[in-house]
Length: 124
Figure: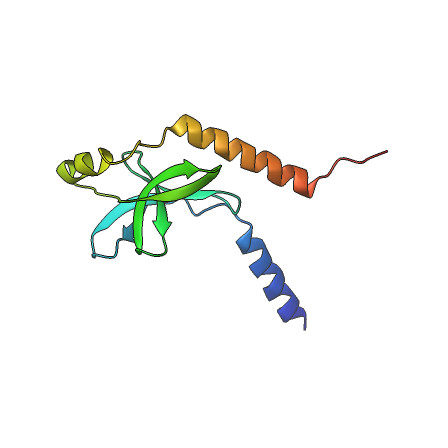
């Protein structure tokens, strides 16, 4: 019984942990691979390439796509990440590249909202 409780508690802690931010290989649907780091936590997460591109995984296309902020959410843009300079230039002409200041602002808002949910102010 103790083992089951410890296992359950370990699983709960894993779901709330920060992203494993070591450099690792990611694969798009067409088999192309690239190196990047997972960033964020359970409130907001993304993939960041070695050259600073911010990506989100698209469940429908099974590709990592350039991220964009829509309706206060970080979402895939519909434009697949390209690592070759020529293909990347063509892809980036189709979207507005996400500014890291915008991402920082969204990150701060999400962290603040999460903190307020877990630490509500006392109403005395």
